[in-house]
Image 1 (cartoon, rainbow, N blue to C red):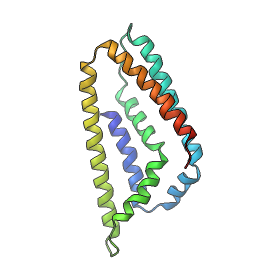
Image 2 (cartoon, one colour; image 1 turned 180 degrees about the vertical axis):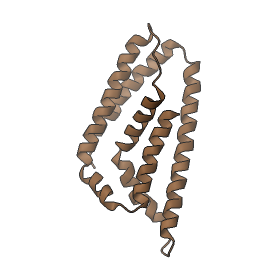
Image 3 (cartoon, rainbow, N blue to C red; image 1 turned 60 degrees about the vertical axis):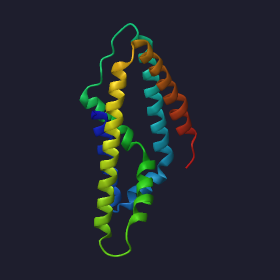
Image 4 (cartoon, rainbow, N blue to C red; image 1 turned 90 degrees about the vertical axis):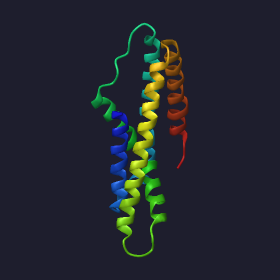
Length: 165
């Protein structure tokens, strides 16, 4: 849940940037897309290698869970290292605004609604994952860690690095 909090604080900051109309930040992220993309890909590769490494030792030793601060920081870093979310919000949310006055209030309401739905959805996923993890045997957890590590490395890290705008 601390990771969920970190992700959603990053999301709320991005939504606030959009709602405040700081288009220059959106433009900056768009211009720096390649740099941010490669930093994000490197981070996903790091997480994938770390997950695979953990799976090698998981059968023989118990792995200590992340501290609350570290889980929060990881979630925040992942959310904030995703410029596509910021660009998506800047392009998506204004479509639902009326043409009259009160657009700023509508945008803040849309942003708040988006943030609440995201936080609730993420929390549900986290709680379901925690329950599933408790039910899994250590052998199944090792396999899940290996699959997750491979997905982070091959799927997310490599595909993100190879993607275009």
